[in-house]
Image (cartoon, rainbow, N blue to C red; front, side, top):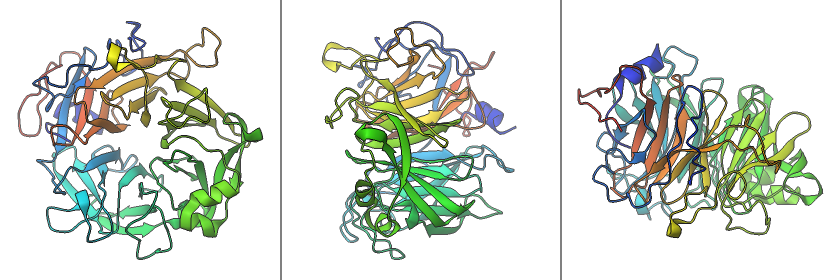
Length: 458
């Protein structure tokens, strides 16, 4: 994730193909949708420094990359979140997981560190100074991915491991990935006070993690037959006791009225999808990220086929779960519904492989694809459904990644409603990076980074 901090923008944070309709999308990030995906642009000279095709009136820059912090011998992938949202340093720090994989300890693969060790890590970027550093890492951590800030000021992060190759010494019975809770040092939020494994939230191929106002935690199983889970703690802010549930739609359907069914907690801590299957939980094709907007929980389903439930190689979709006493499940975004089917061979931009989600500053849902020429789409849940097909029409293409083998991930809005953070992982340049895309302020043509250089305006 690469260089150049937009100091002016970040300081403000502290104190069609593509359904291209040439209609401005309103709100703090108001934009005119780009015309198409970045087909044919992978050889552009600026791919390494400004890899995104973005609308006019926006600037992109690298805020941290492997020249700032290089933990691994091979490429490491990134996810991220900004924390300290309600304390003294609100909006200042970005916390990132590093998704490296390897076999059993001793067979390190791409988890080999430059310091001679191995295993996953959590890092932090100080957006004020530009400094990036590792907070904590362990040899038994594999494929760290999802990360979220809790209302009680800790960080949850988890392993995306369907089959664990590196058992946790504190919970060796788990045969899949586990979720961890990181408590930061009260005086220095760039240091760890403690890390605690939370096996009650399931042994799964974790990715998306989300919270609700009651302190319940939602997680997913990133599997082609994965379920959606809800953990209800006995006491608010205490994840050491409670009950794990899985989502079950009535009558064997995938949408409609649903309930949360309790799971066998012994089995959930060993392999939670076994417990979910036994309880009749509804399966979806590779649930990945979760994002709550109000009382709606959105789920990115990377290979879901909304027209053929048996197809595990579909174009993907976004699903909405209405929370509360009577859950209701609907699909809200999918190719062929409110976005085109993608066909790169003919140059048609479409919606494929929904992956990471973010809550925009005005209630819109931002969606990043896991796809070659990874796109960023914006869905407006308040838009109209003109043809009455059950899908609202507000799907708009915001950006597309010229770095063809790379993937946008960890999309996030912090304190500034006009500043979007997004990672570029497994980059074809060999340099993964964290980037910022900022709406230009009136009269601001350029921004300087923490080294005094100017970023070019796209």
